[in-house]
Every structure is written in C-alpha cells, then in structure tokens.
Length: 383
Ligand SMILES: Cc1ncc(COP(=O)(O)O)c(C=O)c1O
Image 1 (cartoon, rainbow, N blue to C red):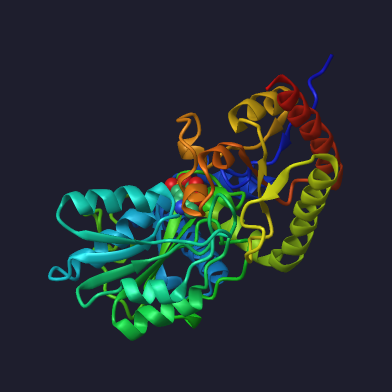
Image 2 (tube, rainbow, N blue to C red):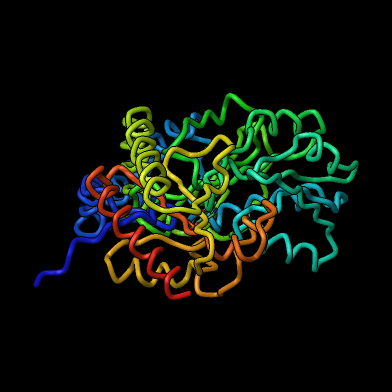
C-alpha cells in the first residue's frame, strides 16, 4: 500500500522550498557559477543576481538594499549582531535580553557572561508577554544592547518591536531583534523604527537553508564578525552563497507578495486546528493563546500526556509536529520558553507545537485533528 502523504505542521522548524524558489536557484547551481567579485561576464551576472536578491530582501524587511547583509542564516546573524554591539561599546559590559529567546541568542549570551559580561534576562507572564516596565528597569547606565525577538518560535507570541526600539533609542543603546520567525508572516518595517540590527533566515520562508540576512541600520555602526575579503561592503567576508541568496531573494519576494492574504489563510488553518482540537480532545490548553501571536503557530498542552510519546505516534501516522524548539528536541528537557511562562514541568512536557504554512490545506487540518485526538486518547488510556 502506498504511504499516506505527509502532513507537515512543523513550519517553524523549517519550510518546504517553494518550487518557484527552486526554479530561480537552479541556474546558479549549474551554468551560472560565477564569483560576484570577479570581473568576468559570469562574475558580473552573479553580482547582478545578488544585487537583485538584496532588493527583494530589503523590500520584505522594509529597508534600503544597502542595509541588507547576507549571512549563513539566523544563527550567524544573531551572533554577529550581539558581537558587533558589544565590540563597539568596549566600556559597557551589560546586555539585556529575554528568557524566551532562541538558543542562537541565549548561547552567545552565556559565552559573553563567561567572558565577564553581565546579562539580564527579562521574564514573561503566563501568556508569554513582556512587561515593558521590566525591560526599562533592566537597562543600566552600562548597558550596551537590548536584544528581543520579534516573535517567539515556540508559541508565536509577538513582542512590541516599535516600543522596544523606541525604548532603546531613548536609553541610547543598540537594539537588535531576532525576526527569524516574524519575517514573511507579519509586516516588518525596519526603517520605520529605530532598530539597529534585525536577523532573518531564508529557510523559514520557503527558501533554502544556510542563508539569511542581517539588517544593519545605515545610521548604526557595525563591527564585522567574519574578516577576510571585502564582500558585503566589508561587513561580512566570504564568497557569497549565490544560489542560496538568489533563492532567499525569490522567497522574500513571494512572501511579500502574499503577506496579507497568506496571513489570513494560514490563521484560518491555525484557528480551525485549535477549534477542532478543543472540540475533540478534553484537557487542551493553548500556550500563549491570550497574547497577540503569529498567524501560523499553535502550541498546545494536552493534560497528562508526554509530548515525546505523542510525537512518535503522530510521526507513525505521518503527521509532523514538534515538542519545543527543533534544536532542543530529543534532549527531553522541558522547553525553556514554556518554563519561563510559568508552566510547570508537567505542562511543559505535555506541549506540542504545530506550525502551518501556505502549503497546508483545510483537509490536512481535519485529518490531523482526527489523528491527534486518537493519539491523545490512546496515550491517556495507556498512562
Ligand atoms: C527565533 C529563531 N532565531 C534563530 C533561529 C536560527 O536560524 P537558522 O536556522 O537560520 O540558523 C531560529 C531557527 O529555528 C529561530 O526560530
């Protein structure tokens, strides 16, 4: 019997490459192999392709093309932004972030702490929301940087970017935002806010993996992490990942073109899924459900169930979801995000993330609710 098609509800981990993105990339994996820095005709065509992609990404971020620095992805963008802000302020030894950031922020913060920096982590409330007074309170005279994500990867909870950026401006410190999950899902107007740096990643928006960008505000200083050739205007050395950048550009163009309609359509899928789960399964709670959220993310707690076991059974039924963030999956540690929201270990370990995209359908939502209700009922029976 042929295998049932996969129901892929793990789009915050990564997304399927859009066929139009793949088509745009293919020439640059074949005959168009020029180095953008070389003066020959092939090189010039590669440079033009990178320039075009820079414009496409800038349009998605709402900034000037010259403010886009291509990187190897969200992790590099995050690391580079933090390092730049601290290096440019050698006398300031303090930074402020939140307890619910991605590990691409938390791990470098730990490393900075080991080097003698002081890191303050702002807590969130039970719905995953930040208290702006607490953020302001944490900023000290020797704070160099405030780094707060635009949207949480596990719950989809949105943070008030414009307010945070304004606060950082008032305090005279750098403001970085990890917008890896927000880009392509909600409008981002980088230039309309006093944001210093903003990280984005291609593979979360139906582009290829291993490529991303950092928005560097044209009025903000920059200290590069990678030194070498003068690529990216001297802001990030290394021969450009031309096929990846071309794919990222196309993915950004497509995301921008369908931003509004997709947000409505994907939110309808998410809402139908949550409604169906609540109707069919007793003891379901939506983590972060009381806060403004991304349109595509649903984080559900199923009382009395181990998420890891539920994932295994869902996987067998060809439904792909995740427990906590992909990077911590398998570690059996309850999600640091849910723990920060005050969820006990039990609830945190009973939570699953379902994240939707333009390639999901209402029929898949119906099937997945059916399968999920069977899985949860079975696990509760066997508990
Ligand atoms: C919020 C957030 N930041 C950073 C990253 C890392 O991005 P990348 O996989 O491109 O390194 C992710 C990926 O899961 C993410 O969700």
